Image (cartoon, rainbow, N blue to C red; front, side, top):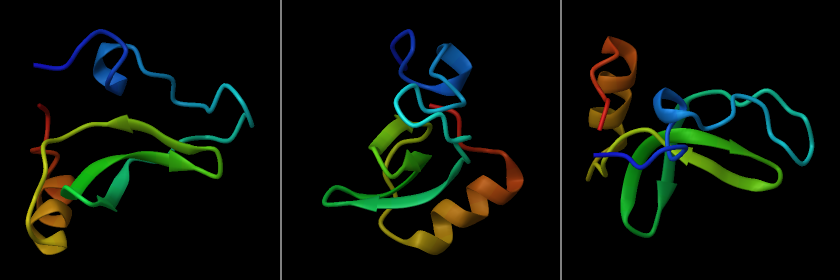
Length: 69
């Protein structure tokens, strides 16, 4: 379960508080794997899903909207 403010659904901003850029939910990658979240030039802002081994699986869930933690 996501903590308050950790995801957009629980209150994370949809605009970066530092650079004011609109944050787009997309498939991202980290050392832990692929995930659905938001990112801007300032860095990561939210992680909307768990981790996936393959980007294709994350993209499929993003496209279907089936990714809430």
